[in-house]
Each structure stands twice: as C-alpha cells, then as structure tokens.
Image (cartoon, rainbow over all chains, first blue to last red; front, top):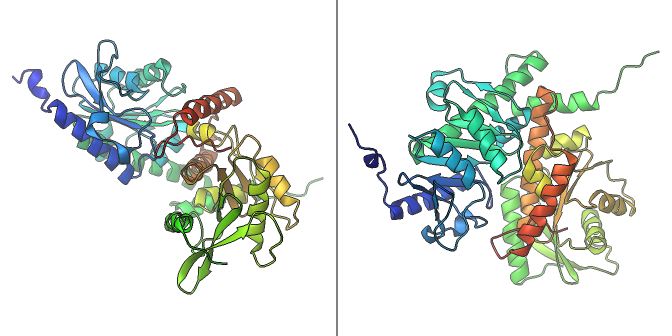
Length: 227
Length: 215
C-alpha cells in the first residue's frame, strides 16, 4: 500500500511553478480576469501553496506563491496569500485525496450560481468528473469564514461547488483534473440554461441568440389592451 | 485631426483590443480617453484605425456627435478619464430590454455599484449628457436603451474591467430570467462591498493592480 507521503509528488519549487503556470492557464481559458479567482496545490500533508492576494496572473512569479499551513492558516514569508485561503483549507480537510483547487469566475457557472440551485449531472462524463450533483453554497461575503463553511457544507461527494453570486470552486486529484472539472461544469451550466430557455419557448433547442430574443421580447412586450 | 505620440500609440493598442473582443465596432466608435486638456478618440481611415484629438473645451464642429457626447461627460464627471461604450451581447440584450441591472454578482457590486440604471434612448439633445452623468452617480456604468452600456473609469484597465463585469452580470440577468430572476445581493451588502473594495484596492494600486474604482 502506498504511504500517505508518497501521494505528494511535488517538491515545493514544483508546486510554486505549477501554481504560476496554472494561473496563466486560468486567464488563457477565460476562467478569470485580472486578479480574480485563486489556485492552490497541496504539496504535503501540512500545507498548501496558494496564489497571492492582488497580483495579476501575468505578473505572478514562483516567489509570489504563498505556503499556507493547514493547522492555523499561518503563512510563510511577506507576501499575503489569497483571502480565500480558508475556503481552500476547508476543502482539503474534507477531501484528503484533493491535490489541486481552482476558484474560478467562469461565466456560465457564475451566472447559474445566482439561481441557488442544485445541478444534477446527467451524462457519464458529467457524473465521473463532477460527481452526482453540483450544489450551490449559500451566499457569503468573499474571503469570509462563512463562505468557507458554506462551500464545505455542500460539496459532499462532488468535485465542484457553485458559490452563490460569486463563482465556482473546482477540485481535482491534480491540476489537470481540476481544470477538467471546471470545463465540464461550464458545459453543464450552459446546458441547464439552454434547457430552461427551451422549456419556456416551447422549442426543442435554443441558441444564445434565441435566448436573447426571448429575453428582450418578454421585457418589451406591451400588455394587451384590456377593459 | 490625427495625432501621434506615446498616448496615441497606447490608445491604438487598447482600441485594437476592444475591437477584437467585440466590445466596440470595427471603426472604434464609442471609446475615448482624456489626456489633460485633450480628448483622444479613434477614427476609421483607409489605412485602418487612426487616433484623433480634440480640445476639451472650445467649439469643434468637425468632431462626430458621439465624441461631443463623450467630451461633455469627460468634462463634467470628475475622475472619468476613459469611456467605453460596450456592445457586448448580454449588455446589449439588457439595454434592449430596458431594465435596471441588479447586482447579481459580487464583482459587479464592487466595480459597477449597487445597480446599473437603464436610460432611455439618446435624445440627441445636449441635455442627454446630464442624464448620463446622473445615471453614473456613485456608479461606473449605465445602460442606454437599444444601444449598449457606457462604462466609465479613471484608467483603461479599470474601464475594461467594468466592461467585463457588466457583461458577466448582464449574462446572469438574462440567464436568471429563466429561473425566476435569481437572487440579487442585498443593497446593503452591495454597498458595503463597493466601499470596502474601493478603499482596499485604491490604496495599493500600482500598474497591474487595479481598483476598478475610477469614479
């Protein structure tokens, strides 16, 4: 049987480099902009490496990546870690196999987070990647312990959670898997909205253009003349 | 009058970015930047986009109507150095619907404000600039019926961020229409977030670290 330590294959330098590379990937794939969102990787049992607060991904270097300790959220060095460090710790505590977490502001998932719904996965790919469902954590101000508690309370067996009015958290056994989770989540959210629009319009399929038309039509339609 | 220099080169780069993202049309219309006593704006030429300049005050009958409108807003609204008129699809859909935009997402509350007002169509009268300025009170964006969203900030990075979060929040408004409207952030939470964000990020702002709080 593999020892627990053997699960952590990254050196500290590798962990820092991975977080920097993944930050650029996050921007490239349109999952965040500016300094929004954050990424962490767990390199050993006692700590994780997380993006700093307020530094644009394009300017981020390995020395900006902050080591945060699981026990008390203490951090090494002068650079301040992301304000969402408590959220990352809460999920690492709940999911011992998790090695990477990305908190994205991806468009479709952020949008659907405002509905406060539980999304049930349908396809085999969705079930395998995301788990049986994706739930929405109750709204809490960014960077608060309440947000960390809300997310931890609903992630369950899944690998993703929507943060109400904020974004999404995607978890993986490695960074590639966390990115895969975010992509499949985005596709799921697109489909859920398209299905809802199709139901309202009575059509079998909708496009973004038909969604806009339906939305505009419903808001600009004059009430019928009555008595 | 086409001008040259570092500022125009910078603006040309920004203009190309906005056109590529579909924020503004290919002729660059709807984007202006103020530098001291001059307003720079793009003009379409046979050779592509060029940058023209007009003085902030004084009469200039040669400038396009939209530039006159921008100049009025730049000169009357303190802190505004960049205006971008976004025609991104979700922003445009909400502008066509003619509704005020509630804060569904927290980055909208931080960067745009407690909501974005929806104004009637541009009447063409000089007084419309006053209507826009009123709509921008304590906010960084306003929607104009059937046309799009006007985003205002103190520098390009912030204005660009306002464009992005306005579009994202408008997408949430469109999508949530099919789910009963969604749950907007309360007015108090939105207001607090904006205050904290402006205070926290304006303090440490350096190139590449933006506040999004140009107003």
